[in-house]
Length: 197
Image (tube, rainbow, N blue to C red; front, side, top):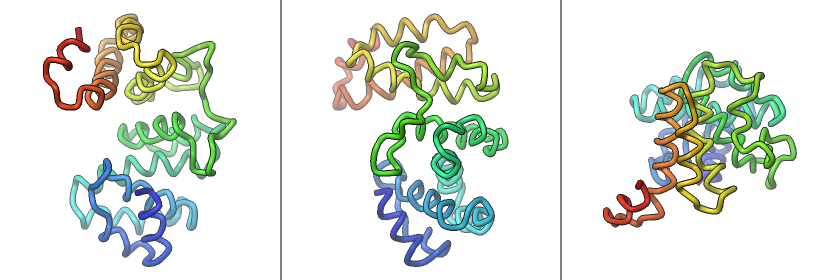
């Protein structure tokens, strides 16, 4: 669905945003914003954000998240702290930066410049280069990385979350783990309770 957003931007410019739908976690908006940044740089964002606001607050939130994806892809994955700074303290944008870092496929393949380290599974959340005000967004997404590394071992990921000493970051880590549990249970509430325990 990112590709649909790409196509809409190329076909209609900023006006094309109104054709995106919320399907597949609003990924059309993500592709659209990423393409806008790719084609016009950051200077193009003011026009695009005006169109986001016309579509309402839910779309505006998705656009800001997509800006985080776009900033990191545009600046290059090795420049993660700079992409976070462009977010200007917007949590949803920071969240987009960290998600983009995890998947990093906008060049058609995984980027070798991702901020990931198999020997240090909580990196980059523990990096001195990541400002404290950005770490909550990091912990929102790190459970997806941990879940992958430990091949779905929910208890192992939960133990990492328990070790976080900042309460808001710890809660965010558990929320991120819940996002991993949800699709695994296919709506079976008993399985949800079993995995959460």
